[in-house]
Length: 349
Image (cartoon, rainbow, N blue to C red; front, side, top):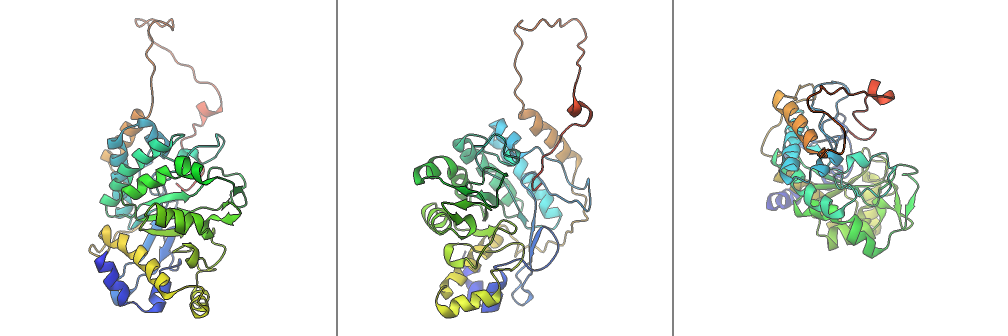
């Protein structure tokens, strides 16, 4: 943190503002580096269960989904999963993994429940996200806890207004994020939905008060892609992704001039962004890897198979089913999924 604080003192206002929005191309999200000060480009990529690379299919491991890892109830499995994914992100040249997803499964038909490690249990999420975060960040990649908060359905996700009282937030929806914070997660992503009439990414109650002040989150908050609706530094947002429709130089400079935003808040955002990058070694290791690299290995494939197996619960047949062990077992598969198995859901990776 001290190195980051010293760096912020030497940055110009324009350089600090540059950190608050997406800029350079490449990867799912990217923030240009600052060559004058040796600040590396921030290279973000999907997703919660592995490096998504549509341009180079087959060049990263298809890991079990987050929900499957939660179903192992095994902290060591979660850490091995996180470490292996972090390794692949690093060897693809990224320094931010846009995961793990930690939202609670409250709507059974939510199309992205598979992306969330918590399942239906906030305590399970609290426990399992911690080793996953440690594994990712131990590999030199900043983890990202998402989606803050109450992003529990995909239907109307960009317009729905979630009415959740304070007690329910802290008892059900916040604990998985608390677990990520306890593990030192470097970043969080705010969601598309509204919370009590205010957009999540400009909600001072949930962003500034609850996440940063009450839960003690010290990393940075980025918006989900296109979830920014205003220049929201004062409300607790640190970075707009993937572009600069609202958190641009003109808007921020105008807010500073009018007194809407204090200069110390710009420093705070820059510090929150830079500190986790120092923490994972992004300033100390010149990562020249590129997305073209094939980062899957036989060891990772074997680990993925092992993790998937650990997520499955088998019931022991104590004579209830009339199966004869001496007779070869034949299994019939019926239906569309037997011909075209569903091996992944629609989401961010």
